Image 1 (cartoon, rainbow, N blue to C red):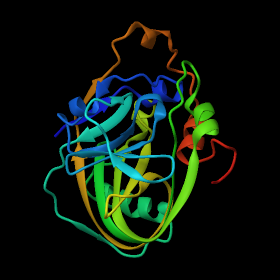
Image 2 (tube, helix red, strand yellow; image 1 turned 90 degrees about the vertical axis):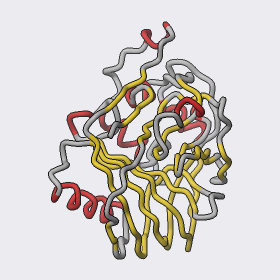
Image 3 (cartoon, rainbow, N blue to C red; image 1 turned 180 degrees about the vertical axis):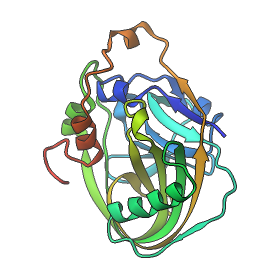
Length: 244
């Protein structure tokens, strides 16, 4: 099984937000995954072969097939034995349980895709609206456009991807999650959760196809500048220098 990735996290962090593929092209390479859209216009959740766009109010639409994608990670998920999860009071607790699962299967140096269907006391999330720019960092864009929201007492799906430490920069090392509600009406990038229980499926992936931008503008970016701390700030919702 193969992971298909559009562009790199470093490129996105440094402000390369032009489309590389369309949603329709992306869905030729996977039925589950996450990412974002041209000009960082919302958070992407791919589930069951459908690409959803979480807007800056937390509401979700099905993304149009011709909508541009600057960054995404998708795959076709194997049929795997489900993993039952009990109560996880925070995201770190869930990450710890997932790490135990992949460690037990000798997978800490591999990529993984996970889907967890759960019942949540709260999901703390964010999305954002489009910001057309060039060479403006993702952190700076989110300072202008990011909006945070909480979903309470909700059933839904977490879609998560894991990249090992040595692949940091291609994607974010560790776990990264997006959420979509069971009725497919709400979702976003996940900051924090309180999960009452859930059932997960985890696929181990040892191959990656990387689709890089082919326009000349891509070569004007120096892709070693985004720091690990800046990536962590964006992941954890600190683009506005807060824990929101």
